[in-house]
Image (cartoon, rainbow, N blue to C red; front, side, top):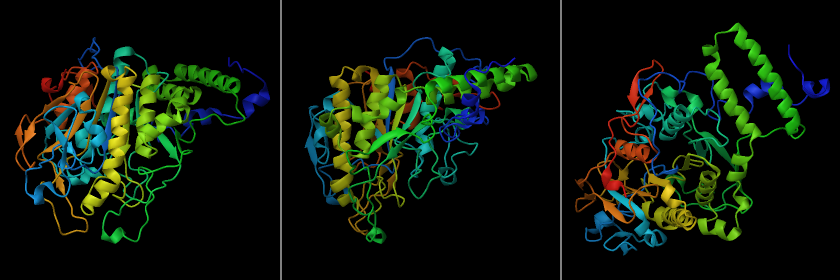
Amino acid sequence: MLKLMGSRKVLCNGVTRRDLLHIGGIEALGLGLTGGTSPAAGTGTLPHKTRGPARACIFLFLFGSPPQHETFDPKPDAPTEIQGEMGAIDTALPGLQIGEGLPQTARIADRLTVVRSMTHAYPIHCCAYVMSGMPNYSIPLETAPRAPEHWPFLGSVVDFLDARRTGEMAPAVHRNIGLPWQFCSRGSSPNQAGPYGAFLGSGYDPFWTDFAGTGTVIVPPLNAEQQTERVQDPHAGIEIGARLQLAQGCHLPEDVPSRRFDARISLLQQFDALRLRLHRPETLQGYATHQQRALSLVGSSRIRDAVDVGHEPLRLRERYGMTLFGQSCLAARRLVEAGARFVTVFWDPVGPHGASVWDTHSNHFPRLRNYLLPVFDQSYSALIGDLDDRGLLDETLVICTSEHGRTPKIDSGPIGAARHHWSRAYSSVFAGGGMARGRVVGKTDAIGGDVADTPISPKDMQATVYQLLGYAESETIPDQQGRPHPIAGDGHARPELLA
């Protein structure tokens, strides 16, 4: 017998049972009900019992790929056609120089692990390759995010493994959160592959936030054809009232108080109990899991409060920079404090493809000087400094990487010069959560074109991240046929990076 809590009028208005099933657009939030793998699925692998030094991870992904020469691997003694117009500066770590466009980062370099020897075989926008354990990549896969060849994103794997280890399917704060919006949804190429649940199912996609506001700064154009376009990119500047928020549908309607919402949940649970009597329980397991996650997002205010950086003092917000990237980094710190496990901040396209990313096939130096480097320098240094000031850096792993690097030789033909795609050698920078403080790992040749010592692949980076979060590289995850796959592909955790 169904027990109807509250008055009949209450039950006939507000949130319906269908609203509960579809609230917020479950698929768009990364809570799709189709496909997927349950953490209870047998793989022959026992949950890893010990936790690593990192309680949480903040993953910064600079889409389009920064140049190693103007960032963390300058070559000041190389010819001008290699080093270019920008020089190198000393840092707080004796013997380390970085690009002159990163003066604030230079002051915190003694807290970082700088890796100059990242390398792989794919000089294309292989976001999914560097974010997952998948063994091979191709250009067609770049714009096929749901292709069966894809493997799950780092944050999706952590979400799955944590659920398997703890048995908690719907934590108060979602474990895998993406900022500032669904990946590549604001640019002209909305189908970029990368941060998705892949064979674990769309229920393990990140929970995406959204951004309400507009850009206040017209960024330097990407190329000559774009000279007439005025792209107001929020990554370069936003108004103080602009904000990150939960996606539309993650809030209760104004006329549905929490009491009424609880009544709907009770009714829904009773319907589902009847369904269990008519169907095999295992057929409803995935449905129940995603339903729990959806309801927890609507009924909880912790994520909503965490992404609202307006709770922070204005002085701190300005320290991070009144830019979308800066405020997203601040929100990531707040989410980690609120209990999130894996938070990703994407520096992501806005408007014409490439208008707001690091893919400098032309106008290379004006974009670096007047836009990209100053924003990154302020926000990144503020995030590391703020975490350290709060005593959170030792337990919060901060990873900053991209798809690849850029060519050692400058192309002087395009307006503002150019560096093109280059994956044989590039740089990434890590901090906290068990990473070494004040260490440079690997080196490149005299022109920054090839790795000369200690090559590290994106899979090695992933294996190291998993280890610091408490999972050995021998852990496996099951695909939809139940076949086990190593969480970091052929990667191995690298002791050179660790404290």
